[in-house]
Picture 1 (tube, rainbow, N blue to C red):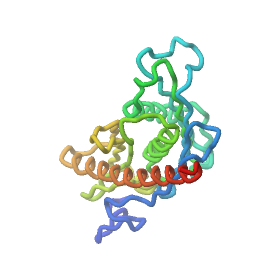
Picture 2 (tube, one colour):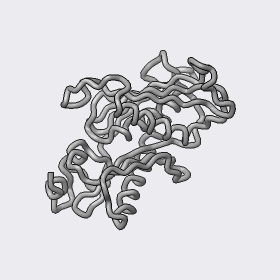
Picture 3 (cartoon, helix red, strand yellow):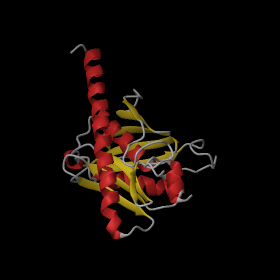
Picture 4 (cartoon, rainbow, N blue to C red):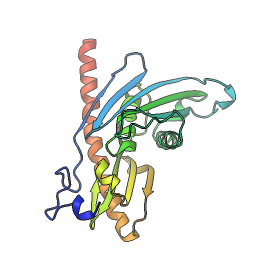
Length: 245
């Protein structure tokens, strides 16, 4: 799909958004009472569910225990009906393993693992519907679930994607924009410090344009933080009402 089809002369994208505009985000915490923490998020038509257990004792071989910090275990899965392909993805396929590794690297940078030595924190994320920005939706759902579990973090970790079309940096790519095959960047940011937890580039991009795309993703991640912070505050307020505080 040509760049002109993705961005009109007036600067509007296929779905009517401006270049730096996020898709609509809706989220809620505490969706599963059985888990230590859980959250559900919708970013546009991409929907993800995250569940957190821990910190708890190491499962399996105790030799895996880390003497100075918690072991972070992340597992990713995608529902069979999540995409139009209707392709069955067995648990543990290459894409799932890569996504699980990316999530683990992201949350190892955000969780204060040194407060829970010789323990394990499990983060399970499932994509229920994929329409672009899958990694970002998984990170944002998992952040809310970790906070719901009461696990200390350095900061929120907020993620967003960005791309480059027809000389313009686009934030929060949809499936149509991702499928066009242009340069794509995924960023996970700790907003308060500006620390990057994960940065991945897919396809080539001239270094002169990298700063624009990176800033578009960073600003979008900060916008995501504003929305997630509002969700957390609302959840705490509702919980305090239930407790009678």
